[in-house]
Image 1 (tube, rainbow, N blue to C red):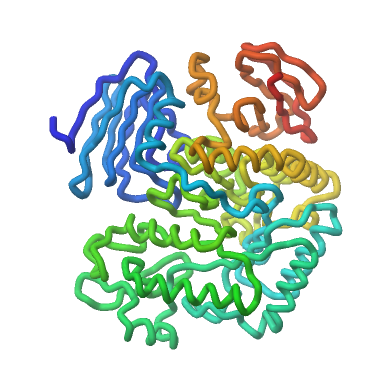
Image 2: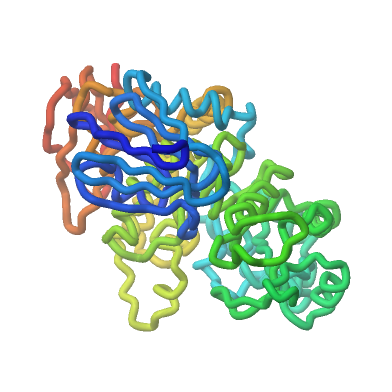
Amino acid sequence: MTDQHKQLKLLPGERWWGGLSRDGGSMPYGDAPIERDFSTLFGNQGMPLLISNKGRCVWSDDPFTFSFTPVLLDLRASAGDAALEVGEGHENLRQAFRHLCQHHFPPQGGTPAPLLLTAPQYSTWIAFIYDQRQDRVLRYAEDALANGFPPGVIMIDDNWMVDYGTWRFRTDVFPDPKAMVARLNDLGFRVMMWTCPFVSPDSPTFRDLRAKSYLLKDKEGVVAVRRWWNGYSAILDLSNDDTLAWYRAQLEQLVAEYGVDGFKFDGGDTYSFRDDDQTAKPARPLDHSRAFARLGLHWRFNECRASWKCAGLPLAQRLSDKRHSWAEDGLAGLLPNGLAQGLLGYAFGCPDMIGGGENEDFEDPNLQLDAELFVRYAQCAALFPMMQFSLPPWEALDREHAGYCLEAARVHVELAPEIEALAQHAAETGEPIMRHLAYVFPEGGYEEITDQFLVGDDLLVAPVLQKGADKRTITFPPGTWNGDDGSTVEGPCVQEVAAPLSRLPRYRRS
């Protein structure tokens, strides 16, 4: 074996995590055949690492390919010259994670803006899709407060701007954006704007950037115009320092002129780039995704979705778009993917929008909105490090179901001091805020449990994830656990508890 090809014999009961947050539903690895190549992100966060519950870990500075059989882990470097590093003897999952964190992605000591963590976020994406307007945004904020929801960060989504790459408010639908931002601030909201690395072809901005060589070129040296979910656009060459400086200046002008607080960085996906593109500096698709996500570091109010090797940085990391569904592409995927985020080093995680963030679902005229699903989404999101609404529950749901969503938001706000303290701990140590049971209780045999989690070491959260369920079975680790319903449970044990639609089961260890 070479430094770029290694094979590890699996230890009895050994399970592994790592690679891509999108693969959380397949984790832990080790009990079934699976193969993955880290050279693509599939729309979410990635890190070139694997960690095991037996205290072993794998790292490479470049992406690599891995495959599991029931007895063997095969590792192959897939790009670059970086060696595969295998570490052993770290006792358990937590110690292996901390070792990798300390040596390869030490935390930078900062967090995203505290308001992103301590209050609900409100994205206007599913609320308005492409019909973003000043009056609608203001009414959204005012209605949220009128219905008892706490103020937080409001994110104005796609189609607020003149064109892709032309980051100026459309005056036909945002006649006075400065006054709008001031009004939102008066209501207690901070304001973020959606942005992407694309440039509409044949626009004045396109012609200007083409002349400056700020746009990505294909292998023939021609400016690349590629398809993405909104059509066909040119793409910023994110390997070019001058391009990044130009882009940052456009966004800073919005801060200076209108008082916006930060930005939602969307669309930095690896599929938009090619290995043979001509770039200012040598760059792979992963490098472009990493550069785009790191732009968020210039503002504490930030959100990223596609990220490569950005663990330990003070960036809010949202999970990829989820469906309005109980299945793994919807609600059932939130916890496994959120737990995977934390074990990749992305502590400041946010689930997708409550009820689902896939616009095609909500543009379907035949969609039957599932009020029960919406409530369980809100409860599941309530004790992630962040929670984000979009489709307004006060409009989409009846009073009873909207009230349950409001209660979920209140749970998040009530525990905000604890979440903020854990965020600061993550900024200093790199440890996840949202933790796998096997991370905190390494001797418990909890590796396969992905439908409940811990906030820190002592708050056990077990959302209901099945339609029609008014009970759920909870695994309680060792200790005395005091429930939100006044009950006390002595662990370790497995117990069925009542979980009507009004309840998010949660228990604090004495």
